[in-house]
Image: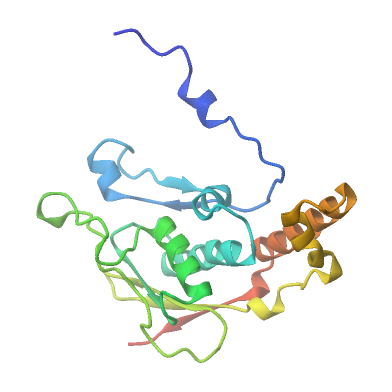
Length: 219
């Protein structure tokens, strides 16, 4: 068989991003990937915010908020070890058809592997299964802000993350040009200013820990 002359790494690095973000990646083990020799035993997948943007198809305070909710939740749940897919349940305070909870739930699922009834059922005997580990309308939150809980199935330890989205900078009048950008009538200067302000808001979510509150839930 003739080998490909295009290195896989070169293909993966072909990007045309117009923006760069400063965000720590999320490292998470996947027992199925290890069993099937995708990863060496004990080595994690490395999930970046750019990966989440690809899954969402856009970058915004909702997408970056979901990324950070997953990150701070997993860090709190696994302070001394790597988190493990199939051992993390995700509980959302709101419904799946909510504009915020629906998008965030999908992106948090992308990171953690937690899924509803259509999730991966596991290898023989259910090893590494993630089906029915994502639940919407799972509890009544104390805040109107987006709230998620992360539970370890091996220890039942649970943490709650609240995203104080109301404290994200509003961006000012520059964001009012979005309709003109969509219609193609905005000037280049307006497009550049919009981009600076928009992605500045996203970066603030990725960088500002004060936008997130993490608490342990006692059982």
